[in-house]
Image 1 (tube, rainbow, N blue to C red):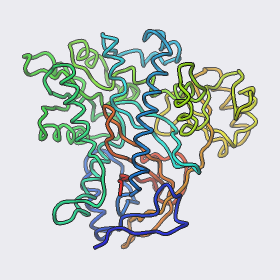
Image 2: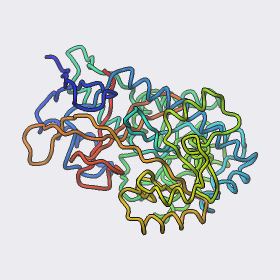
Image 3: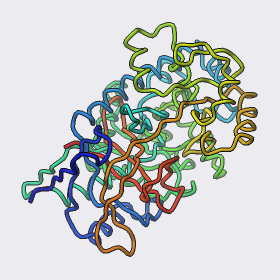
Image 4: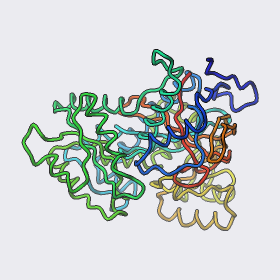
Length: 452
């Protein structure tokens, strides 16, 4: 059976390719398989689910990862050159005191592995991909979800010889390769500590154990550690220690859950390297995007063209002059006058938090938000990008057959140790656009994007 479908002209932005994969089973079968794979992980119940992987041309898929890797390299350099030492960078970024912890004693190691785990967020604008932010943290969403979705789609779409009509890396396989390389670089045993907590809201033990189980069945030794269990990773016989690991948590999430980070510092101090390191917070900050967008003295002509092409105009909010479309403007008056063109973002906001979309806010509320943000110099304004759409087949509770909707997906390419590791995407199943958080609404859903 031909699994490809040509949607014809006028069905979504050309970047998406105009082709898709047909559903390979009944709506009820697909629904049951998707929910089974993500059972007991804490992933929220979704009334609307995809009916097939979201497929794009290989050239579009390659572009996303090629550009992601290049921009992460620039992001890393911009973050590190903001200060000669960690203390200098903390001051330059105005980091909250809560983030001044969990540093590795060797600054080279600390900086070397800051970008081990990255997921940019981007949309397809009128002129193609536009990168809205960079999530740089071992606690990225989308990894387990992409692994699980891929397992379903490969099971449904593979032929009798096990060949699927699409291409996509496995996130767990790529992350396992990252840890093999890391153990070789450090000349340590390939024993991986997956550090997190099932006491954080919305997460269950299986979320972490799935990854540890995968490693154990693919040539690594791995174990999931809650924080109080971490002394067992180093206070033992040398051959039983875990010298490397994944820092699958954020400091704010643990503090909100009342969890102590002291055991993590103890593991770091006793030789367990957890990636990404705390320096990742500087790369994660949206202030770094502002630095790149405005331009740094060391950037080449090629660097600048790449940034101009793929990053929307972004500026660190303060009372000063800056460039806008080749002209100098007073930034604050410009921002106050042109709210419909802009989005206001806090440097460290996550999951769409601390984001104000100008065109969805009245003038008084916009002026209040901007006035408050400008005081701290830890927010950015970014040009609003109107996301383009593609046509997808969905299944919903109470509906017996898949149906078509034009959605505006947010793409999340996964990068582990500089390697492409799959393409997570999320969208509103009702076709609306905006800040898409899978935990933030009844119509939000997610899928994996593959190459055909």
